[in-house]
Image (cartoon, rainbow, N blue to C red; front, top):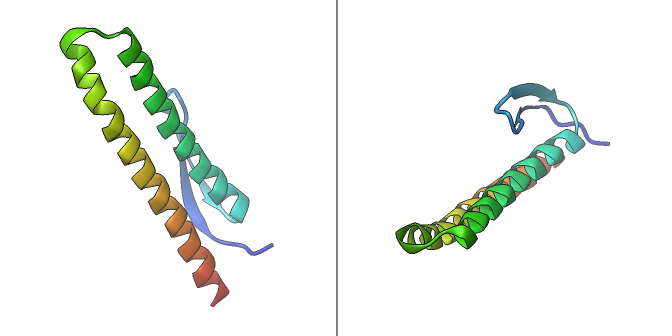
Amino acid sequence: MTLYAATVIFKDGNGVITVKQAADEDLLIERIEEIEREGDAKIKLVQEQLAKATGQAKANLERRVPVERAKHNARAAKLRGAWQLVKEAAAI
């Protein structure tokens, strides 16, 4: 197993932040996946609100869903790209 060193910050559903020193690949991947799950949950929440909304609130939420999805996809892509760079740098 290749070791990587990084500080990983976790935030649970109650807003409690935990800082861990990551010393292996599994912990770093876990954090990336956690961020992706948080983004998915946020999009799902907005979609649930949209299903119940009417009028102007519904129009606002219809605009918000693609914005949240785009932000989520961009963040996930950056994290995956950063992880790839870490792996490449460690291989040098």
